[in-house]
Length: 451
Image (cartoon, rainbow, N blue to C red):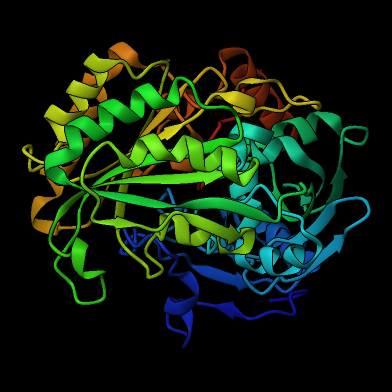
C-alpha cells in the first residue's frame, strides 16, 4: 500500500490471522477485515486513514484486542502493536508512551525511579486504549481515573492529519479523546503523569464458596469506612479443575478479595486484618510488593479467551443488593458467570483538574460480569447476564463504564450510559466536527450529531 512502511495483511496472506486476532476471541469469526495495516509509526497510521477514507472503508484500531467490540468484516484495521517506546522524565514525573505499548512495558521503565502510572489490574493491556477509555486501576481511589492524568495526546484524525491535543492546543478534541476513546482519531502516543508510588500492600484473600455470604456482606460494610489509599475488589468465581491452578482453588467456587493499599504499610495491615476474619482462608497472598508486580493481585488470564462482558455502575451496595447478587450469582445459583465488584468513590468521584468526557463519577461501585465462551450455553449466558444487571437496577446510577463494555453493548443506547447526558451531546457535536462521516465507527460508537 502506497505510503505505508509496515506490513499490510489481506485475508489470504500468511500472518493475517495472527495480526487480526486479539485477546478477546468472542468476535473471531466476524473480525475479518479486508486489510490489516501493521503500523510502525504515525506516518503509517495517517496513510492508512487516508486510504480508508478514499476507499470508503471504516477504520478500527487495535493494540492488544482486549476491547474489541464491532464486526470489522470487509473494513480496515490499524494494528499499533509495533509502535513501541516509553520515555520517562523522573524530574517532571511524566512518561511518553507509544500506541502499541502494554502496561508491563511502562512499569519496567518507571519502577527504577520509584514512580508509577495509573495502570490497570492487567499489565498485558494496551496503555493508550485503556487510558482513553477512562482507566480504572489499583491507585484510582487515591488519584482518580487514568484519563484525568493525560497531559498530551498525539492523534491522527479522520482527515489523515497528525495533531497534538493538550489543554491549550485543540482543547475540545483533548476533552473528547479523554473518555471518548477511539471515536475521534487514532492516538499514536500520549504523555501522562506518574505518581510517587514504589510499593503496594497488595494481594488476594481467597475464601471458600460456603463463606461467600459473610465475605460479601462483610466486604460491603468494610468499604464504607476505608480511606482513599485503599483500592479493592471482590470476585466470585468457580475455578475450573486444571493442574496449572493452585491446588486449593481447583474446581472450587471461591470468593476472591483483592487488596491494593498505597499508604503506610502498618496502617494498611490494620485495614486488612478484619477481612481475614470474614471466613476460613484457602489462600492469603497479601504482601508488600513492588508496584511493577501489581498484575499478581488480580492474576487475570494471560491467554486469549472468548469473553462476554457486562457492567453496571452502582450507587450503593447495601445488604439487600448483596443478597440479590448472592441469589443470582452465588455458589448455590450455578450461574454461568464470573462476578466482580470494584470499589469506586474517592478520587474517582472528583472532577479532574482539566475537564474530560469520562463518566461514572457518581458510582460508588462497579458491578462487572463475564463469561468465557461455551457455545452450547451462549443464549443462557446472555440471559443470565441481562437478568443479573436488570435485577440490580434499584441500586444502579443508570450508568456504565466504557472500558468494561462487552460485545453486546455496542449499541447507541448502551454507549450513551457511559456518559453524562450533557457530555454525550457535546461528544456527538464534536464527532460531527472531527469525523462527520463516522469513519471511526467500529467501536463503542458515538455517531455524529445531525446538524
